[in-house]
Image 1 (cartoon, rainbow, N blue to C red):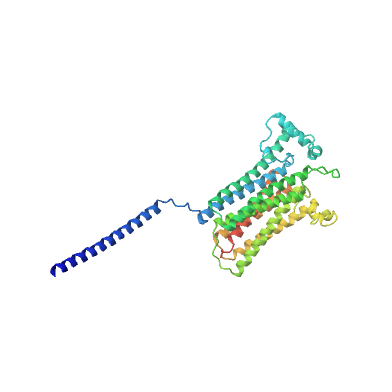
Image 2: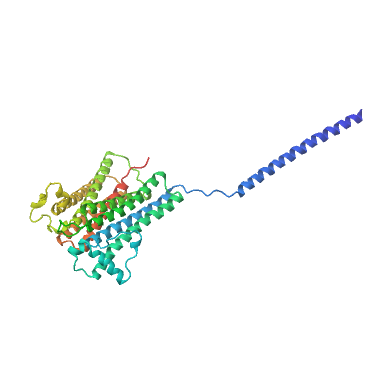
Length: 402
């Protein structure tokens, strides 16, 4: 009896020990399995993270756009100098790549000069021009066109890189595509403008020049590209101010927008002045030939034609728009002084007012001195500077994004 009980106890103990050994073995196996899976996951190379637009990438993109806007300013200024030196019609062909290399040998220069001799500007205006004089105007236009190609590369190549890196939000992608597309449009519009000055017009005995309408469109598109790039760059780099939307602040914003629109319109009217050489008529100020309103202001028929084709009317309109812009900017400055605004906004409005008076002084001096090239070029550059400060003011006064 005692022997059978002892046998049963030993059998049960061995059974429980075996189960415990199996459970311990299973537990250790699971631990090793988890550890090995963790080790495998740790050794698996991680997928490279795509950059998400943030404050850092916004600053990078903002600086790029500000740099591009600076290049556009260079193109506008160089284009104005090209116009003032009457160099814009020296290159009678347009090739995107082939014309990037100017003539090298004397034979190539003679061939290029021969092409120029076939067009109205040489026949009517420059029929006594020598080859060295032709080289000067050729290099002026060549430099302008090469600068335009530099602008295109400065937009397109970084845009492709930033797109690939994931620096753009969905809305920013649309803006960037629009800016790059506008660069191509600007180049085509430039050649369309030049083409108008190369066309034969037997009915006209006037000095050959490009169409003032196409010149205005070319300048206007450049200014739109500049304003869009500058605005986008500033809004990416400068955080919006936390200002309560009071009634006076809303009025100031509307006032600033209207003033900016008037400045833009004044700059466009300058294209008609340049296109018609309207700065060479009535070189007196404030009156025009001892009269506030000249007699030939409505000499063309129909009357609407005077606004765009009568040099007297074009100069008169540019004067009125310039004085109107100065008055609006002065009013904006005085209105802003009675408000509590952030420091940056006050500085921007103050610089806008200072530039407005400088620009008017430059315009009057250019007129009284019969449009000397250096002074006229400075006046044209001043219009872009004035527009720059207006965009800066609008960026400082913008609403906080929701």
